[in-house]
Structure formats: structure tokens, C-alpha cells
Image (cartoon, rainbow, N blue to C red; front, side, top):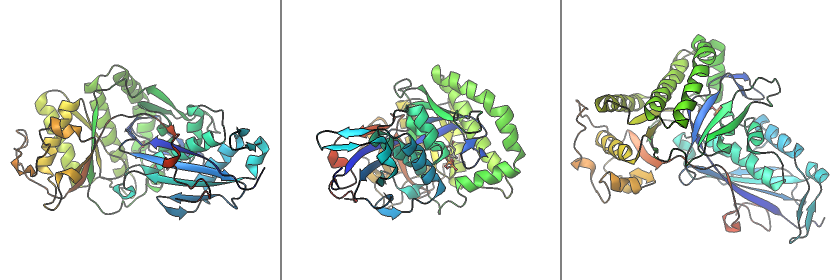
Length: 415
Ligand code: DP6
């Protein structure tokens, strides 16, 4: 082996939002959950992580840069993912570049990793899910690992539980598994992203200070103190996952919405049942819930499902584009942007929905009329930072265009 070469791969991986939540671990090191969970993968065009991984005999140590800043890889979660993926590395040959790496060489070779989120980390959207999934997926490609996506998901799981569900597009189930070593705790795809093409997703990024309790430490407290968590894991989720799978496979929106909202509310009830109690939602979150509940009721059948993770942001899944357009009109009436924010930066992502909502080119949302079912018609300008419009999306992909790599192909350092 010459000493000069750098070999690299770049991958892009989506984030996901759970519709049946993961809350509670039975093993904190291996990250094994107390119940199954189900998620929808979000379109990577609007929310994703891009990661470049590189190997070279010139590298002195494993190093990683996240959003341009060097971070430590010494944490157990990174170390577990790196160790597991290195174990599975195989021979790699790049004839064009004259590079050959034997299986045994991988133990000695060091890695450089650069990762970038196309959405603000401070928005409180699950960046660790896309991040660990992308790290594991990119390394698997670089190291010519044979394992399939489900097997890789069991490695990504050891970085962050929810990451295992980001190895697939569409709707995904994380099977909790029974084995002590975690080998059967992995993700499987239920249906791909084309199966339920009507769905449209609007995320309200709600204004708040930095999140107070991390998902990881909060989860530990819930397992230790919440009786509701035990009841949920034993009695509620096993039945609910079966119903949810049926709703997804049959594209039954009424059932899907009912289960999604109920599970989000139970997850937050578990947080409240934790000692000391944890509050992830705020007044704006609660107002959004009551808007959606009122509207769904007035329509006679659900138009929109809501779900909230470990923070105040609302993820709203609309039955189709028409419902999403009406939802946006309603939300913009109650949660208009601050006077110095224009609509173009207030609604981001898939802006094609603006046309459907008759909002395209609109300068001022003052012209919107109040939703008929909303008695108080009060307005809360600035309580939502912005809306992201998106759809269910595809799973991880390898990017072949070298220009998209985050590391320099000569030096292996961030560009
Ligand atoms: C509320 O996957 O972030 O988003 O496994 O400790 O890294 P760790 O936790 P994490 O928890 C996510 C919890 C959730 C619900 C979910 O995604 O299922």
C-alpha cells in the first residue's frame, strides 16, 4: 500500500418521526427498547443528514466533524458503532486508484468522518436518528460490508435507538426483539414511500428555549419511576402496533390518525407520570392539538394526525394535499409570522403546497379568514418559528457525485 491515497464514500440518510413511540430501554448500553415502535421516514430533500467517510494510511486517528465543527468520538455510542462496523469490514479493491485494502488492514486504518444536517440542529428535530443511520450506512459502503439494511439497523441502534428506523424509507417498524445480545432488535420496512402517496406532512417548528431534558436521560427516569410506562409497554403498545400496521397497509387514515394522536398523547402522559415530571410540549403545542381536534371533529372524520417528540414541535400528517393546504391556512391564521418575517422564509420545504392553499405570492396573511370551528380566533404571532412542508420519503442513498463529498479527496480534511 502506498501512503498517499484517500478512499471515501458519501451517503445521505433521512430522519424519521415515530407514530408509535419508543420510550424506555431495557438495556441502556445495547439500546434495547421496552416496546416495538413504528415511524414514517421524512423526505430527505427537506430533512436529512449527509455524511462522508474516508480512510487513508496517512490518517493518525479517527476524527469526526459535525456541521463543520470537530467533535469527540470517544463516547460509548460512537465507539460501539465503529467497533461493530469494523468487525464486518471486508476486502476492498479500487483498481482505478490502485488501492487494495485487505480485511485485516481495517483494524489498523483510521477514519475521517464529516456529517452535515440540512436542517437547523437547534430546531429540536431528531438529528441523532439521521446522523447515526448515515454514519453506519456510509461506513458499511466504504468497508464493503455484506450485511443488509436490517442488520445495519441493529448497529445504528447502538448509536441512538430511533436511528435504526432511518435505514429504510416509507413506514418502518423497530422490532424490540427478545435476545439479550440485541441481535434481533432491528428495523424492518412495512411499506415503501410510494405505498401511501397521498399523505402530506407539515412540521410546526415551535419557538422555545433549548430543550430541558434530553430524550436519553428522560427515558431513564421514566423507566425507573413511571407505572404508566410499564402498562403502556405490556398492554397498550403490543395491540396498538398490530392495529397501526393494519391501518398503514390498508391506507386507513381514520384509524391511522386515531392511533397516532393517542400514542403521542400517551407518550407525553408517561413523561408527566415520570418523577420528577417532564414537560416537552408547551402552550403552543397544546393550542395546535386543540385546533386539530376541533377541526377533525367538525369534519366528521380525521383530516390530520398530530405527533410530538421530546420537544414542543408539532408534526402534522395530513390525509392528502387538500387537507394539508386547509391545515396551513388554518395554522397561518392563528400563528402568523412576526411582522418582519416574509411568507417565503416562514414556510419552507415543499412549497408547492402554497399554490394549493391559495397562498402563493401572498404578502400578508392578514387577509385570511378565521376557521369556522375556531370560536376565539385569537392570533399568536411569533409562537411558531416556521413551518416545514414535506412528505413520506425514501431511505439512505449513496451519492456518487464527488462534488457533494464533505471531505477533500486529496487531504481527507473538511472542505
Ligand atoms: C421521543 O432515539 O433520541 O423521539 O436511544 O437514547 O438515543 P436514545 O433516544 P432517541 O429517542 C427518541 C425518542 C422519541 C420517540 C421515537 O423516536 O420513537
